[in-house]
Length: 168
Image 1: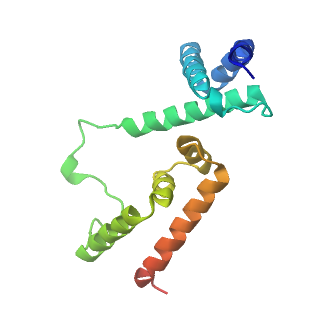
Image 2: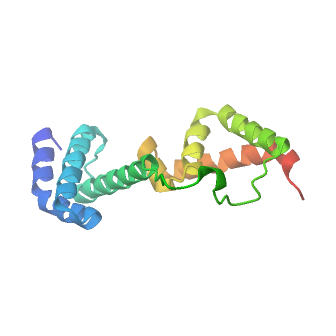
Image 3: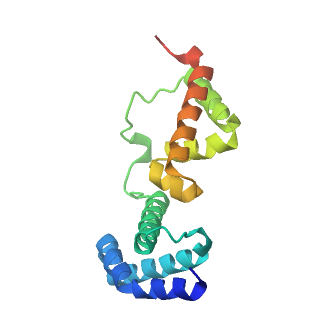
């Protein structure tokens, strides 16, 4: 598909894009912003599109992934602080006791994760941060199966290395 056909196809599905964006955002201004972001992303990823793929489905998948990524980014950046809360008497889940041994173990686990091969470390870290397999695949621009296998192998490596901490 040449550049002109690509752009014509993109223009021809603008109404579909807006309707889908409205379903995701429930707000016309946010839907238009999402459409604009999606259009820019699609134009930037033209070389990744192959003719045997459903163009409309490809574009709407990019839109959905952008929406999900933006949503997660918004959730991570928001923090609610109650100015009336007594920070010295907060209700903390658990016993509130952190032993030196458990702190050492957590530090050692974090060190082991950082030592993972970068191909395993990045998807595994994103997974630990709460991203789904599909979101990780979109963020790293790798196939879903690759994401799943890399997380599987990272777990296996860590499980083998951390065997000493298991209580059987």
